[in-house]
Image (tube, rainbow, N blue to C red; front, top):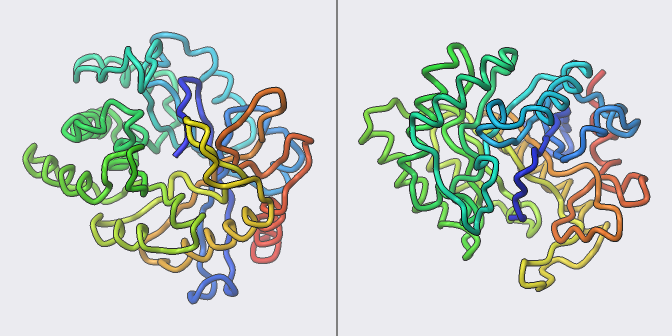
Length: 318
């Protein structure tokens, strides 16, 4: 739902639960916070949340081309005691959706993943490709490539949890229709004679920010096994690449969306196991962030949505 950068993206997890927000009292989730800055690990507002899990999005060839940034992030995450989920984006030099934007061959991806796994053997959770049905990704017309990358990670990461795909919920020109894409992807798994994955990642920004559950419910019906909301969150401000404002700046609406996000996630305790929220820091002017779902404003102070997460964590967990 937002412009993807070729720099690494990090998503951190906190535990949230609330009988008041869910029909299932005592429900338990791992919920995430995303940001591109490693400074989040030592930020006092981040530390106050008690985060012990993290999601990181980086170039699939990071270990081969330029591992410095990934090394630094991994070191910070480990120093904080966080468990890590990694998702891969296009390689270094890619300008997706502009050219160059190509998919690596199976051999190239295999070499890159083996190098990554060797360099960071403590990473045990993987998403072989990020936001596969987004038109900003080269996988959006090639679900068969998603099957290939999944199979490679499963083969070379024994004992790891490998998600089948990472799918967005919008039906817009920004991405392939998620219903059609999921059906094609499942068919490609069967065609390749690869066992259907039992853990999947979805992004349900539309449901969360327009206060419904239609897309989440559909995706749960289409996908088998566990669902991880690998990226979601209440949006403070959003404008399209064509500078059309879809969601004007509104901290109160973001606060309400964050509460609905938790309600929606906790509605399916037997299916949804994790929730990763985007993001933590807002861009500081003069940088303009056209997709702003940050918990911390440009002044360095928490927005209302941060307090929603903090209060629920402190109330229901030690």
